Amino acid sequence: MVVQQKRRTQTAEYWLEELTIRKDDVEHLYEWLLEGSTPQTLDDLSVRAVARRCSREEEALLKQTDKGAIYQPQEAYEVGQQVVFPALDYVAAEVVAVREGENPRYGPFSVIQVRMEGSDNVMREFATDFVLDHPLNRSAILLDDSEDILAAEQLYELYGQNIRGRLQDALQSTDDFVQLGGLWFLRGLMPEVTPFHLNIAEAMIDERGQPLTVSELLHEVGLPEAKPSVQAYALRYALSNDARFAKTSLAGEPTWYLSALIPTTVSERPARLIPMHKASGGEWLNRELRDFVEEIQDEADELEQELAPAPVDGIAYYLIYPHLREGTLPLTQRASTLLQQKPSERFMVTFVDQRNKEEMPGWMMPNEHYAWGLGEWYRRQGIPIGARIEIREGDGPYTFLVSYAQGRRRSEWLREAKVSDEQLTFGMQRKAFKSQYDKHLVVDVGSPQDLDPVWTNPDDDARALFELLTELFLELAKLSSQGTVHAKALYSAVNLTRRCGAVPIFAELTKRACFDPVGDGNWVYDESLRNVTYNTAEEMRTRPSSRRQDLIVDTVYQHGVRSEVQSL
Image 1 (cartoon, rainbow, N blue to C red):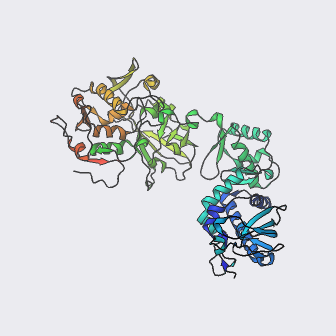
Image 2: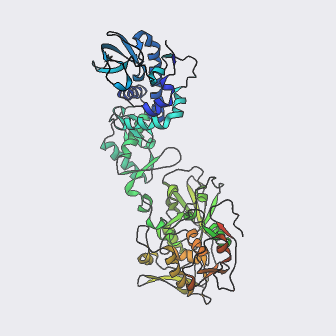
Image 3: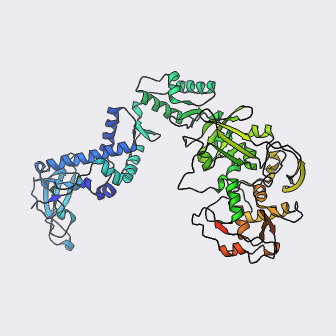
């Protein structure tokens, strides 16, 4: 008796376990792109392939009674009989021979030999008269008209990840298909982009001295006749495969620039801006140190946030040595809200000195959390480490006003950093700067290049952070009659030798018994407790190993933890 069957394309097993992208699938997509002459996403191609599979199964099911009997292992078949195999996409075959099966485990059964339809007379064998339990004996045969049929888009929503991956592998192995920016197209449909066309594009960008869109380039490049969208795709594909050109991203259409004109600091993140130590979340800090982290706003202290900060029209940051040395500024999550639209890649901007309206070309790299273009401005204005820089939205698109608060330019005793015998040392000297600065962060370094001998990059063999902290702490403590060192001064000093967020430094102060807070951000050092570490919030708060009479006991918090119930 014939029973009803669920369509195979409506099952998870078909799309997750049985799916193989065949040559005819790829050929169908080739014809579809050829007919539409428009680049398509992998999602669109995948849905198209799913729809075709469903359509083919529907057609096969409707015609199966005309082709022959449906194969089930429990049935018997005769020579010359036509048999349909649902598990093989309903291909029909002719029985050419019948013999007895040979396997004592299964008892008596038969084997039919069939010639498969449309496969150059390929012969295959299948068990029949098989009375034991078998999945195909339980399979349905005819259409189940009562089932809820899912459309191709619904099936893709359920099983799309597997379908996408297999189709992408198939298309990538075919020279006829090309992919650019998530869009797939046929190589043979793209107008030829010759070296002559690319030379014109190069000359246009060089002449204008700024990135250009593909639309702007197409006006002069003069590609062979084709759809505008296809011309644009062909030119983008050629530009992306020519090392002379680099894509820069603005809101909307991407722009293209000359690789030779992009500063090295922009094309590759400087090693001085790659943190050797950054916040990971959960570090313990006392209340005062936590407030300093909020004040400093170091991009290396930021964690991934579920909620983006509220948009602002201006931000301020304190300049540290790595940014002074590279002519860069930090792009924190808060600073990124200055961008009304947020390109994901590097793009050109214009910085404008708020006082004299001087324009300075720059670049922003939001993914890398920094912007470049202020090095010469820092130098001309004599801006020191620890200066407070402000940046606000300008009048034009991607234009930003930069400024600093001016001081009275009076001479003060300030820390001075020097390198002696490849060691970083500190002294005091009278110095006057016209910009306001944080008195704890400020350090005079003379020429920034003078500190290169003591700089440590992330890939270098470096001492542990605690070892460096104790060395710098003792060196800075010489400048105080009480032997105290301010936490922000220690942070600024560490960043003269390696890139480090404030959180890792302040976490070491909090958990190491050899450091003790004595008020107003100042800390002292006790060599006898060098190997003692506090392991609980209670110990970090009360500091039971301390010998100080002026110890400040303070609440401790975990960095980045919302439920701040660590007060003991």
